[in-house]
Image 1 (tube, rainbow, N blue to C red):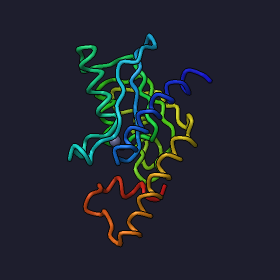
Image 2: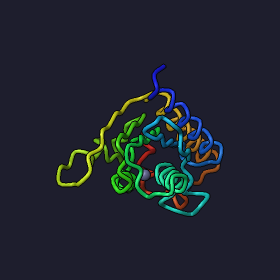
Image 3: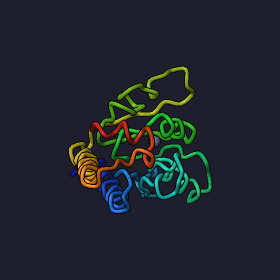
Image 4: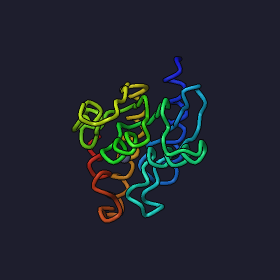
Length: 174
Ligand SMILES: [Zn+2]
């Protein structure tokens, strides 16, 4: 198993925590240019009533506090699902050097799934992107989560439409 797969394993553990909390299972890890884990985080917008509480935003905030700098140049962000527009924007602000993601998100991804913000040369920051790392495991967590939730909704006869975000609903098709 190479370094990318190892660090994605930590992100998968974080996604598992989100799953056990009833959140869409997405996890992230921020690794310094020396290869040190600076922070880990998972998705928690439902519990925190915060549409910005994606795993990537949380891991950027934690890592920035750890190093005492809002810029994290040279660092690599690992996340189990291709980042959305908001998270990709935050990564550009933080000057993340490499983005490594697991499953692609054809309904919400901003690294090639719907748009590719990493390839816009007019931006003043270029990010290397590696997708598809342990993609099957990352995607299985998501499909399992939504399958279980659909089953629960069928049993109770009511949906959770009001409780989920547009982005979450988009991911129902994964
Ligand atoms: Zn996001």
